[in-house]
Length: 269
Image (tube, rainbow, N blue to C red; front, side, top):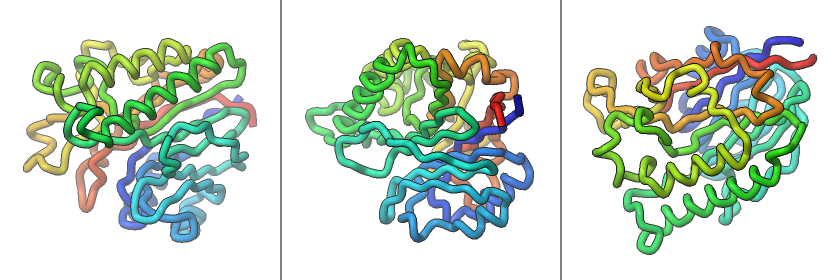
């Protein structure tokens, strides 16, 4: 078995932040890099830069100007049929297999500002996406195929996954309808939340800090929106002790508002 280092990162425009991506690859040496919100079509993706960074294998689900996900790898990628998570057909999901491990890279809709599906169609779209995740993953609960789900899930599920549980209960990303939906997905899908395998549920854990904050690091009003899950077959292959949120990458010049999240896996190569 070989160690594979996997990172998930909402990059918020891969072309704008490719220098940061290349620096991260050189420094942290991930074998697999799952990006969300790439904001470009397949033909516009910086493939040459990924190859120069040591990731010659890339699969992309792109869309003009918004959304989009991609996976870069040091090892060959087998592209799989992606489940129908999105009722709008947007580029928000990508399914692949690398070294015998199935990987789903997801970008769940943010949901807008008003947590009411009747008056806010963006929130209705988000709840529909989560409902489809529940149905799809529940049907695979007993699957013997190792499955890792990563991405910007846009839900901070626990009390200590947000800077203030009480103040955010009516704020999109931490409302009870969203956190209950995520809890059902994890339970019915048989997933382990890798971040919480390493960190106790009472420990504050964030991966996203708003651009609106004058000093995001000082105020530290974060939320854990970015997740790595492993199904029952993949959990034994996952080294939870290696789980890391690279908070420093939220800082610096032209950062994404999300930090990369990394874990090590055991795979047969």
